[in-house]
Image 1 (tube, rainbow, N blue to C red):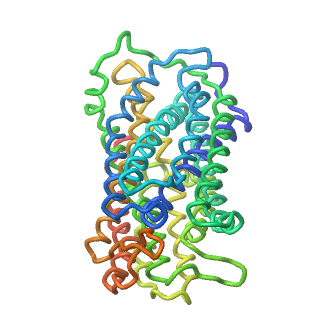
Image 2 (cartoon, helix red, strand yellow; image 1 turned 135 degrees about the vertical axis):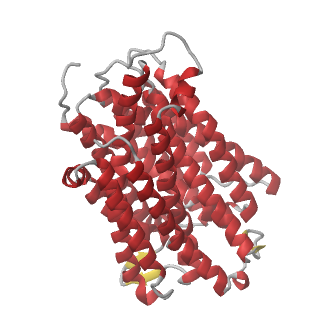
Length: 451
C-alpha cells in the first residue's frame, strides 16, 4: 500500500457518497415515503405497506449478490469505485421518477409505484454496497478507517439535516399541489445526489488489492454463517435500523395525528422533517467525535453499549411527554438527546464491518469485503422495510382508515384517528424503539471483536 494516511479532501469526498445516499435519497425514502405514498401518491395503507415490504425483502437476496459481484469487479477505476462512477446518474434519475405522481388510475399507479420502487432499490444497492465496501480497501490503518467512517456519518447527517430542514420551505417555494411539489423536489434532490455520488467515485482511492477467490463459489456465502462476528453484527445492524426505521417512518403521522399538524413557533415551521432535522444535526456533531468516544470507552463495542443505553433512556422519556404542541421544544430536546446515542453508534457500526471483513480475510484466506458490507446495506433496507410496513399495517389495524376526498385523492379519515390510534403512534416513536435499544445493547455486549 502506498500510504496509510489519507488526505482531508479524500475523506470529504468519501463523506459525499453517504451525503447523497444516506442524507438525500434514503432519508427522504425513510421519513417521507410512508406519508407520501398514502396521502399524496394515493395508495392505500395496505398497498403502501406491501410495497415497502416486498421491495426491501427483495433486497435481502440482491444485496449479497451485489456484494459478491462487486468483490469480483476488475477495472481501470478499481474494484468498487466504478459502481459509484457509473451508477450516479441512474440513482438520481430513478429517485426523481419515484417522486413523480403519474396521471393514472388506481391499478396504473400501483404498477408504477411497485416498478419504480423495486428499480430504486436495485440502483441504490448497485451504488451503496460498493460504496460501503470501499472503506475496506482505502487504508489498512484502523484509526484512518474510524476517521473515514466518522466523516461518512457526518456527511450523511449534515446533508440529512439540510434535506429535512429545507423540505417544507422548498415545498412552499415550489407551490402548487403536493404532487407537483414532490415531483419538482425529487428532480432537484435527484440531480444533487447524482453529482455527490460521482464526486465520491472520482476522488477516492483504492490502495488495497482484495485477495480474490480463484473462481466463483457459493462457499463464500456459507463462510458468512461460520463467521460469528458477521452474524452478530448483521443482527445488530438490523436492530439499529429497526430503531431508526420506526422513529422516522412514524414521525409524519405523529405530527399530523397527535399534534394536529405542523407547529409554528415564530417564523419556524416544525413539521415532521424539521423535527427530525434537529436529530440529524446532533448526529452530525456527535458522529465527528465517535472515534474519541470509542477510545475513552476502551473499544467500539463498549461505546456502542453506552450509545444504546442513551437511546433507551431518552426513548422511554419521550413517551411521557404530553401530546400537546405546547411541549414541542421538550420533544425537540428529547429527539436531540436520543440522537446523541445514534450519533455515537452509527459511524462505529460501519467501522466494525471493516473489522469483520479483516477477520474474514484472515480466517478464510480470501477477501469478501463487498459481501460483508452488503449485509450492512441489507440490514438498513430490511429494518426500514419491516418497520415502515408494520407502521402502515398497525395503524390500519388500530382503526385508521383511508377515504377519498372531494377531488378523489386518498386521505386519512379524521374520524378514525381515535385516542388509541394516537397512543399507538406515540408508542411507535418511543416505547417500541426503546425496547429495540435494549436488544442493541445486549447484542453489542456479546460482540466478540473488541477493537
